[in-house]
Amino acid sequence: MKGRIGLWRFLPLSAMFFLLAGCGEDKLTALDPYGPQAEWILDNMILSLYVMALVIIVVFTLFFIAVIKFRKKEGDEEIPKQVEGSKTLELTWTIIPVFLLAILAVPTIAGTYDMAEEAPEAAGSSGEEGESAEGEDGEESGGEVEEEDAAIVIDVTGHQFWWQFDYPEGFSAGNEVYIPTGEKVWFNLTASDVIHSFWVPALGGKIDTIPGVENSMWLEANEPGVYKGKCAELCGPSHALMDFKVVAMEPDEYEAWAEEMSGGEGSSEEESEGGATEESQEEDTQDSTMSDGRQAFEDQGCIGCHAVEGQGTGQGPSLSNFADREKIANVIDVSDENLEAWIRDPESFKQGNNMPPFPDMNDEDMDAIIDYLNSLSVEDELE
Ligand code: HEC
Ligand SMILES: [Cu+2]
Image (cartoon, rainbow, N blue to C red; front, side, top):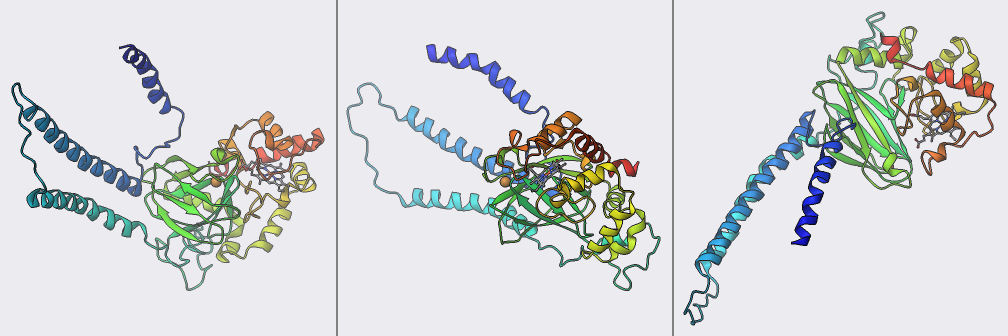
């Protein structure tokens, strides 16, 4: 009796837990799908739940019938008839599970093949965005203009403890991956150090990122939104903080974004080159008036690890659109104080991460760098 009272007391508490668990998370659940893959997973989860429920109901019904109907009655002294094996029974409880597994197998196998679809061979490079560069010079990629819906293939690299997303147009995005809605976006995934796992519960399944191995998967978002992703493989002290976000935009918005990321208006020639854009990026940075902040960013050596406009170095996340981030390094809210605190001592926020601290940077450089980072918005450019 005592135990029961104790348990009841926890009921409001656990109810609260479930309510609160729904708060503040950016769609971090597989039970609320926003894309075909996640829908498929949920449908199959529910189907197997039904199958399991059916089994439980049948087994327990039989069990209770047996317990009640065949219980020992008053004056019953005989030992009941002993049964040793029954072909009919054995067959029944072999065939029923086979039948149930067949029900599960049909959608599972079909879906697995669908999901294992390979990324279209490099169709993304110099693909869609280059082509749709507002038409200024439509002839850019010469004869080999891709068909309307050339696929987008994004290279993903897992690092302790951040995500690198390299786009076919030659730019890199750190920690937040932008995709268009309503189409399959392919990801080719690997890792630079240890095994990580790429998972966006609201959009689909997860897949490991393994050093030296390239895995591939696709995701699709039905509607615009921000979908939270997680590293799902214990990878070091800050594994639990290795989050990222998928930002799904309407296709035309996405195209404008991608164009802006790959250098804005003047750079459609460089887009047509696909990957080989290093030179033109150097030019780009020299063109843009070298602000104090940019100068400090280079003087302090940040540029050695953080690309701004351009492919990631792999050492640290690209900061090309840093001002669009919702969090710094996905752990602290964006604010000048927090940014300074991060730069002076990243370790205090994310144990074991690979950014060196800059505890003694002078205030002048610090302020300039913070202003500079705050100016690096691509979404603002689009408005
Ligand atoms: C040795 C390489 C290295 C240098 C030098 C470096 N960083 Fe970093 N930085 C990193 C890494 C690695 C991360 C990712 C940390 C993590 O999240 O695990 C990072 C993360 C960041 C972030 C958060 C990025 C995001 O996506 O939210 C900011 C901002 C940042 N660095 C600014 C700077 C500034 C400013 C400097 C120069 C004063 C600098 N970094 C120098 C490696 C470096
Ligand atoms: Cu990880």
